[in-house]
Amino acid sequence: MEIDPFHPVYQQALKSVMKLWDLEKQKIKKRNLDMCMAGMILSMACYGKSKSEKIKEIVDYILLRQMKDGGWNCLWHQKPAPHVSSVHTTLSVLEGIKDYKDNGYTYRLDELEEAMEQGIEVLLKRHLYKSSKDGKPLYTMITKATFPPRWKYDILKALEFFASIKKS
Figure 1 (cartoon, rainbow, N blue to C red):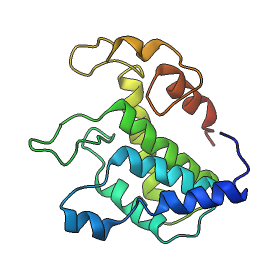
Figure 2 (spheres, rainbow, N blue to C red):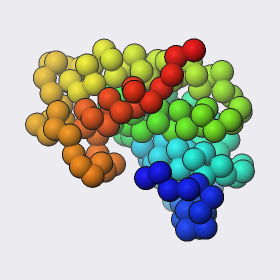
Figure 3 (tube, rainbow, N blue to C red):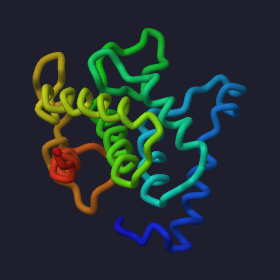
């Protein structure tokens, strides 16, 4: 959105968003926090330069739930658990990690950078939009760019992410 991260409206909205991250409440309700939301909240919090300790909780949550193939899936908690990551969820988490890194956060940064490389590989192996099962597009509209961009995954969103990362 490119709003000034220190704008009072953004900072107030960020406080509301951070309230969504409550591990204790989720344990009581016996529900898990959505992994896509973890990535999105991490991204928003880091963009807004939040000093909340919840950022460390989100980082721990993300690292603990990385799948064997290197990506993430918002359905990780279901029985039976998926064995393959989701391109959408993986991109959401990667965007959060990128914003975390770009805004100078350091808690478990080495682990996040390694996880990020693995997540990138997942997207590349799937050509950004293909099913791991049959190599076909995941859904019809995935190769169509949407404007204005929304939360939903499409190939343009993935390409924008790749254009934004810098290799050192």
